[in-house]
Length: 99
Image (cartoon, rainbow, N blue to C red; front, side):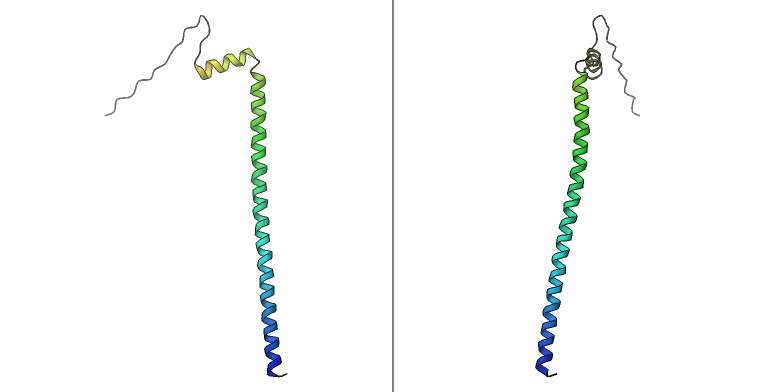
């Protein structure tokens, strides 16, 4: 082989190596993008499940709002309301004296 042919083969190998490296980089980038998409998909599924459970809880509360006992319970616990003919009792804790 002549010197000219060796240079041609050497340049051809270099181009081939560059093409392979570019292809591997493109495949790696697409793999990473696919990984990111799957990660987002999993997070979205988790969020959907959270929202479904929250929706079920809200629907149950909505149904409970037609029950007078539930309304009374909420009024007593959350708003410190008392029924007719009841005397409210407030417990006041004394602060401890600091030395």
